[in-house]
Amino acid sequence: MIDLLIRGAAVITPEGQQRLDVAVQGDKIAALLEPNTPTEAKEVVDATGKHLLPGAIDIHFHVRAPAYPVRGTWESETRAAAAGGVTTVFEMPISKPCCATPEIFVNRREQGKREAVVNFALYGAPGMLRAELVQGMAAEGAIAYKIFTTDPVPNRLDEFEGLCVPEEWQQLRALELVKETGLVTVVHAESQPLMNHYTALVKATGRNDASTHGESRPPVVEALAISKIATLNDLVGTKLHIAHVTSKHALQTLRKWQGHQDISGETCPQYLLFTEQALADFGSYAKINPPLRTPSDIEALWEGIRDGSLISVTTDHSPFTVEEKERARADIWAAPPGAPGVEFLVPMMLDAAARGLVTLEQAVALISSNGAKRFGIYGRKGLIAKGADADLTLVDLQAKTVVDRAREFSQSRNTDYFFHGKTFQGRVVRTIVNGKTVFLDGEVLGKPGDGRFVRP
Image 1 (tube, helix red, strand yellow):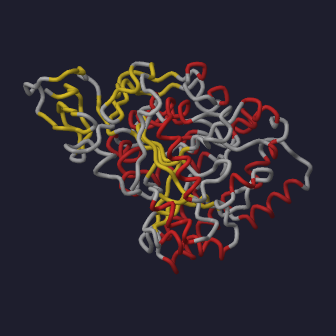
Image 2 (tube, rainbow, N blue to C red):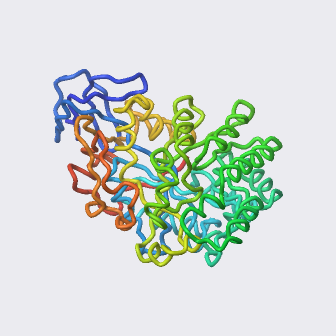
Image 3 (cartoon, rainbow, N blue to C red):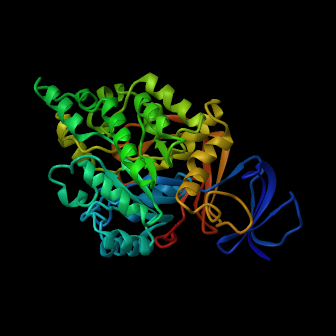
């Protein structure tokens, strides 16, 4: 007798969509069976008319724990992930202090083990530029490393110490150190000198309205930083991944290097759905870095998704409080950048498939399989196959997701001005993590500790 049998679903497998029964034993997929194969199970889920996907993997996610629990905690934000069909999150190193040493890494890992409802991996920050620290975090299980090519945020220096490497020599050294681990370097790519130039021009006008945010960080700021880091990487040859690509110019620059070195890119739902008009509409609630762009940039990003230039759609889930956003609503320069979104990655991509922007199989690759492959966990995660981890997302393509922030699970729900009021075609019905149902029909059933630490 097996633990769980999911009957009658259209299953998205590496070979394509198939009508199968999926048997789960413990935390693994035990078998893929022909429909209605006689099987005894402790629990049977009738998934007729629904689709079973490999659990979504959000490769760009922020909790910041143990810092700022008022914004969100491991428990609150991974409950939100579970509600959104996300079974694994990759937590970025911004915290207080920044995750730049093995000791800090271990503390964050152990806290995640105690509190996370879904699986999690941790990035390290290599910007202290010390080999023993970078190697130490790799030994403790870092999934990858993250750098910013910008200065640290004023008044948040300890959160970014070891993460920000604005000087070219620092970037080069960070690439060299990460190369020795065999892991990926993920880059927040914006050119600090050019950003300084544009910011000075805008501030000289005395303006502080929302539109100044985009004017101070135009697409060339992003494109130049991508070109610089890729040029440096020609000397090193490490695996490079560009975070949250936002613009046609940045995408064109990324494409120039693809085929010449091991470089990939991602984008996020907010850049695929919203233009700079959202800043005028929502003010500080729509401030994110890099900024929102134009309709032509959105069109270019979708084309980059379809042609494979961008391998992943990920959320950059970044919770803040209403008080923090409201304090800066009249001064966009002072507003903290970031917004929640992990609950709507899967519905948004199901909706994109329903609208013909991508196929369902492409959507699954973009939110699960491709990230698993890029970061060295494919085979265990990112696919439905015998022996793989039983991380599964059951969805109903005929149902709709109607977003009401009052019903969201993120602690930062009231700052959700992006998704509130939107309707997506497709709905997450059940989320299974390590063989256990952690979300079912609108209710989070998972408990702290259900999530496990994921290493490459």
